[in-house]
Image (cartoon, one colour):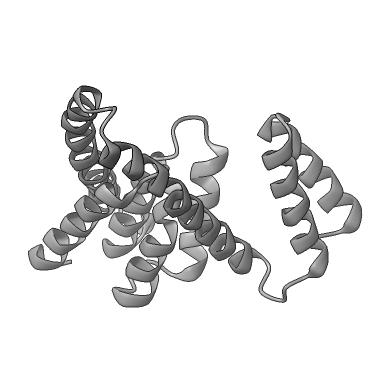
Length: 193
C-alpha cells in the first residue's frame, strides 16, 4: 500500500465520519462500495465477516471501522502468515481508520450541539431535525438490505419474511433486539437457514 492510497483511505473515512448520521451501520453501503468495489482492498466475504464480527462483539458499532482497518492492514501485508509486521500493520490501520472515523464527527458534534442548544427554537433548526429522520432511516435500510443480500444471495423468502417481521416488531413494540436475535437464531436453526 502506497502512502497516497493510505492517505486517500483515511481521508475517505474522515468524510464517512461526517455522513455517519445514525451510527456506523449507516455508512456500511458506502464502505462496501469503496472498499470492495472501487479499491478492492477487501473481498466480499471478508467485508461481510468484518461486519458480522463487529456486530456480535460487545462495544459500540464504530468498532466496525477498526475491524475493517485490521483486515485491510493484514491483507495488504500478506496475512497473518507474514508475521509480526503484518499484525503491526493491521493494528496501525485499525487505529488509524478508527481515529479517522471518530475525530471529525466528534468535533462537529461538539461544536454543533453547542450552537443548536443556543438556537433550538429557530425554524431552520427544527426543520433540520425533522429532515434528518428520513435520511437516517434510508441509510439504515440500505445497510440492512446490503447485509441481507450478502448473506442471502438466492433471496430465500423465509429470510426476507423474518427480516420484515423483525422490522415490524422493532417499530411497533419495545421488545429488546437481543430477543429478536435469539428468536431469529432459533428459527433459523429449526428451518435450516
